[in-house]
Image (cartoon, rainbow, N blue to C red; front, top):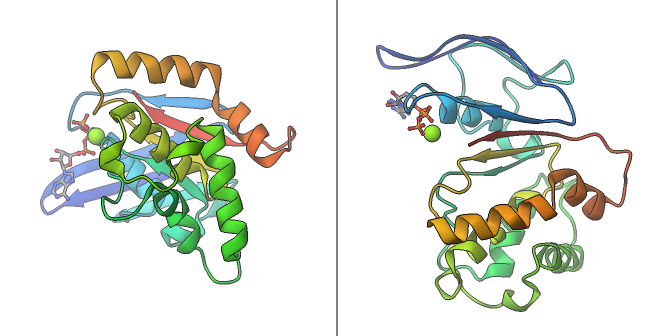
Length: 203
Ligand SMILES: Nc1ncnc2c1ncn2[C@@H]1O[C@H](COP(=O)(O)OP(=O)(O)OP(=O)(O)O)[C@@H](O)[C@H]1O
Ligand SMILES: [Mg+2]
């Protein structure tokens, strides 16, 4: 993934000032910087939730600068996991799949199957019919992760994924993630050890 001369302004304020970064494929890349330096803004632009004023975003040298979010095949999990309160867990995990362009959208049966696989993956198969408020913070975070992985993302963006958790749950989830590193998720999920996937995270 490459950014070339990215500039983003909010009114007169320049949040991203000529960003040029190349992020290697198949690696975990971390952005570090003080509060307000533009990390979230950059991730939102990568995801297609925000657009730069000028410059380019390239995936495998393909220009996706103007590609809408649902066509970028990116999974993202932001600072606050923000599950939909009025949807049950299965519908939360399925959400990204239901938004895919029609020609890529799986059938209802395939969506149900994929949701079940993902809930197994995050070791919460029993909560499909529960609602977010019935889960602990750590469990919600794992569901947010399952939701991010549902669209088989080429790239997984994690924006301070532990920010909303207390120290104990944070430790639990870190331990869980160490045991299930991103490539293992992809391997399990895609069943394809050769697939090369990129990840980008913010600590
Ligand atoms: N929608 C917006 N409108 C106006 N200013 C914004 C908007 N979004 C972000 N900013 C400003 O852009 C700058 C970068 O914000 P951003 O959220 O990217 O920072 P960050 O590096 O993620 O910070 P933190 O570590 O606190 O999460 C900040 O000064 C912020 O106030
Ligand atoms: Mg931020």
